[in-house]
Each structure stands twice: as C-alpha cells, then as structure tokens.
Length: 195
Image (cartoon, rainbow, N blue to C red; front, top):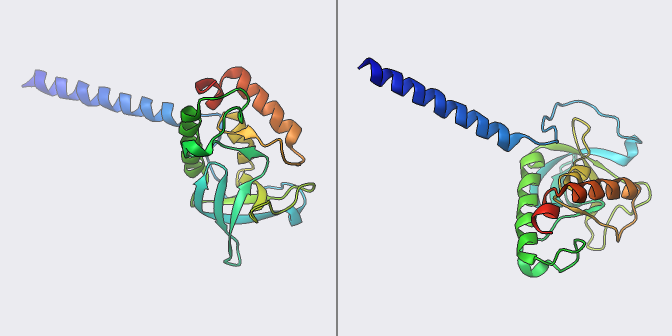
C-alpha cells in the first residue's frame, strides 16, 4: 500500500511540474502582459485616449468603446497582419513570401495574440501627428498602447505577427522598419515559418 501511495505522489508531482513548465513556455514572450492601471504619459494628451476594447476583429483591427459610450472600429496604425482567409492574402505582400496558406495561419495566430493581450481590456489609442485620424474605409487609425506603456502595435512587428505598412505615412515608420528587419533576421513569427 505504501508503494502505491508513493507512486501516486510522484505522479502528481510530475504532472504538476509538466503543467507548470507548459504554462511557462506558453506565456513566455518578450511582451510584458501585465496591465497595471497606471497613467502613462505618451505625449500630447490631446493625441491619446483611454478606451475599452470590446472586440478584436483580426490581428490589426478592433472595436473600442470611448468613455462617452460611443464605439468605433480602429485599424492599428503602421502595421499589417496577414488576413485570416487564404483568398484575401497576396503573394509577395510580405517581402518574398508566397505561401498563402502559411500567411493565413499567421493571420489567425496574430488575431489570437491580439485577443489574448487586448480584448476586453483598457488600452490607449495614440494618434500620430503626421497621419490622418481616419483611413480609406473610415476606420480610426491609431497606435495601441497597453496601460503599462508598452507599444502593442510595435510588439506585433517585433514578434513577427505583422509587417510594417509602408504604404502609409506615420511618424514611427523608421523605428517599426528596424523592428521588422530584426524580426526577419531572427526568423520570428511569420518570417521564420513562411519564408
């Protein structure tokens, strides 16, 4: 009977260890996911607003609720994640990548990453001084900052979930291009999986 108890104890300890190791691996990332409710100075106060993310549409678009209760669709400024439907991705839109199925998989991963980090949470919309506030489809264009001060939009590029949207004009373009270059060099995210 004593051997059986020892066997059960060892099994429980081993399973607990494996679960904890798996949870650590799953959550280990360069992005600090903590969201302390602090007031972070991100520049001119007229250029930022605290909002609540009601729904993530995909990796680079979300619906947000403003303090006055109105809701708007926001396109994350300066980045482009792959589409979540294969027929909406184009060859070579992401540098030399032509594997549309792989891009679609990374579009879904980007959507999941964005949901995990910002859906049903407060974030700052930060508007760029040289970019229009609305895009071609009438959506707001803004950087997304976590309440801990992390530029989430930049994190999408740094971790290989997005490319820099070079077709637009925005103040952080050069910095974002450097992040993309580094992600490509390291083979992070879609750059390693699809390239």
